[in-house]
Length: 183
Image 1 (cartoon, rainbow, N blue to C red):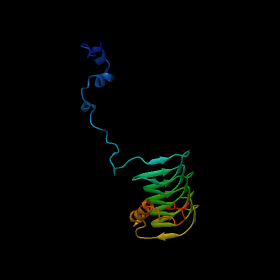
Image 2 (image 1 turned 180 degrees about the vertical axis):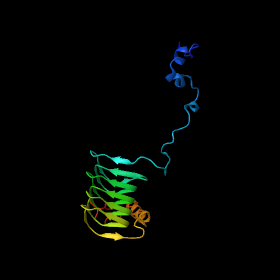
Image 3 (image 1 turned 60 degrees about the vertical axis):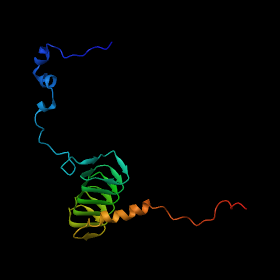
Image 4 (image 1 turned 90 degrees about the vertical axis):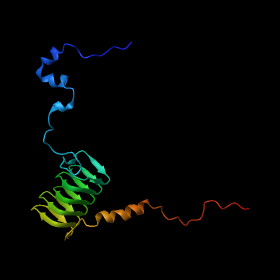
């Protein structure tokens, strides 16, 4: 036989503890009060940055609709709205972002509306930008190309390469390993 669980008829013990009163006696979550006015967690709203920690190595491309902060190592392309490459970070690949702040090592192309190379930055590669600032002490070797829209055509440019990658490879023109059977 199963035990029967019932609410105690005398819950004075619970009510005598004021810090437990709302938890024990609240029949619905509406008594918790209004939600705190914090950051929105809806897509497109402000949110916390995604952080690649110092001890993390990413081998592959990274895509985010928000802010990405790199403190570790990324071997691949980074696409985000806002990218921060920390002082100890190492990125080998391209960076595409509305705004890009570089403090660490980057070996690759940068495409961004606003690009900032801070004093500790070490960048080897071309930078396509609308506005760019280079602080004293930053290392930059490559071409700086100012364009009205450095991000234009990137989503359309990625589509053909993806469809080409998905298309079957042309048949190889090699002779078969075994001769066809004789009839």
